[in-house]
Image (cartoon, one colour):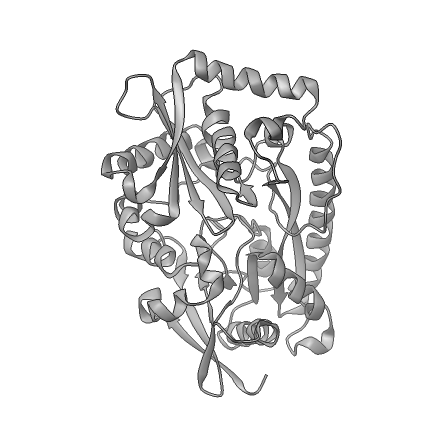
Length: 413
C-alpha cells in the first residue's frame, strides 16, 4: 500500500475529462464524467442536497492509475442505503454517524460503483489499494467509517476476497450488505415472442393482454435517442417525473431538479434512450420512460405519463425496453427498484452488495449484527420473488451480485 497515494479533487470539474473517460468502466453511463458533471451543474449534488463531491485520484509512484467517485453524504436520502438508525446508535455513545464518506453513484440503486482503472493497469492491486486508501481517508477525516454503495459485481468479488480478513486492513473488517434487485437477462432471444414463449401459458396470456390494452387504445411505443429527442421531450420527462413522484408522498424520489433535465441533452443525450408512447396521430408522447444505455446493458430509471391507462406503464417501462434490448443484442436490462410485479414479467432477483467499514467498535458490532439480519432477509425475499417467475422451466442461475430493498416503497420506476 505504501507506493499508492490518494488525492481528493472534489468537484468532477477538477478531474481531466478525457483521462477519466478513457477508463473502460466509464463506458457505464452512471460512471461517466458527463453524468457526474450534469449532477453538479444542475445542483442535484451539493452541500444543500446532502451530497458533497469528493472525487479522488489514486496514484502509484506519482502516476494516476484510477479515479474514485466519492461523496461526503450528510444523510441517506438518494443513496438507497437506509442506515439512518445508526445515527441514533452513534448518539447514544456520543459519536456521529453522519457525515460519512462513500463511494456511490447518486440516486442510482444499480450495482455499478467501482474504481475506474486506467487502461493497461492491473485492476486487482488497484481494487485493494482503493479500499484501503478510502478507509484511511475517512479515518483521517474524522468520519465514522468508509462505505461503498451498490458496487459492481467484479469489485464485489474482489472485496469479498480480501475484505473479510483482519490482516487486509489496519482499520478493521469490511462488512457486506446484500440487497435484492431485479434484472432481465437476454438468453439469446430472437424476438419478444421468443422471450414470452418461455413463459407458462397463463403468464404468456397476461402479457399479451397488457400489450393488447395498449394497442386497442391506439398507442405505439418507439425508442428515441436522447440527443435526437428535442427539448420538449426532455421538459415533458421532467414534468411527468414530478407527477409520478406526487403519487408517493413522503416516499417520493425527488432528487433531480428541473435544471437537470435542461442540461442533460448536452451532457447525456447520447447515453439516454426514451421509451416514448404515442397515441395515433399525436406529435407529442403520452408517456415516457427514461433509460440509460451502456455497451451491453440498459437501465430504466425515470417514468411518467400525461394520464394513466391500462397496460401503459408495463408497455413503456418493461416490454418495449425488453423488445429493444433483444433487437439490439444487449445482454441485460435493469428496470429499477421496487414493484413485485416485475418478477411475474420475467425479471429475476439478484443480490447486490454494499461494503462498510466502521471504525469504532461500539458502532461496528451492532452494525455488523444488523447487516447480517438484513442481508438474510433480502436473500429470503429474493427467493420468494423468484417463486413468481413466469418461466415454464427455470434455467440455472449463476452467482448473483446486485441489490437493495425493493419491498421498500422508495423506488425509481
